[in-house]
Image (cartoon, rainbow, N blue to C red; front, side, top):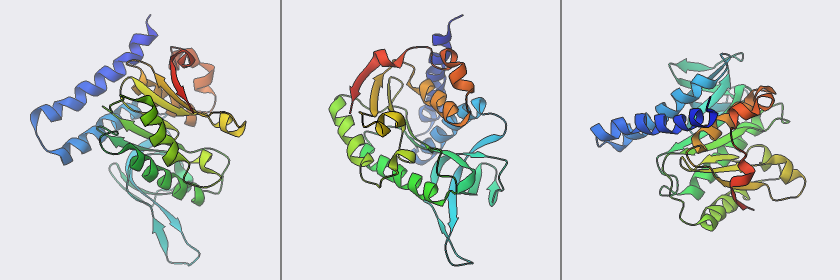
Length: 248
């Protein structure tokens, strides 16, 4: 059986379904919503039943009873259904931070749409959620998923990620953007243990037709405990270390 082709089929399916709406209508707002729906549906297939994925807001209490603070609207939120939900209407949710396992910003082309600014916004969302959590030991999965980013110069991508990543405070390794699928071939990952050890924690990989799948596999690893690691050859069918194009 061919595990690599199984994972490559994720990219083929996502791109094929995404293009159906674009081929029929020229409405960028609707196209953007459809792109979010496509990756959301794909991720939901892999999630354990106790987790859901939706879109909406996180709210946190303030020191003043009767008042609260809302986050920016977040494209995709992965949350634990064992926690109470403040508001839910189909896939639209308003949640407290303790239920949130991960957030994802979805873009058609992140480099054309301003990768650095996208990361800054996602970092701010991550910090908002992390600051409201009681348990501050587990990193938040903070991802940017882009269907068709242009990667002509690796150093340009590196600079946009690094500059945006370094703006926030000392705990940024627990909530900043840590996974980016730039397109079906290019994948970014932040390795927390490298950061703690004072090494170069940012990795850019070129893994042709596997970036989308590796993004999802890393999300599953982030929320699943030991299951993905114990079956790592199934979730990660190639050794990414061979495909590293930049460390910084």
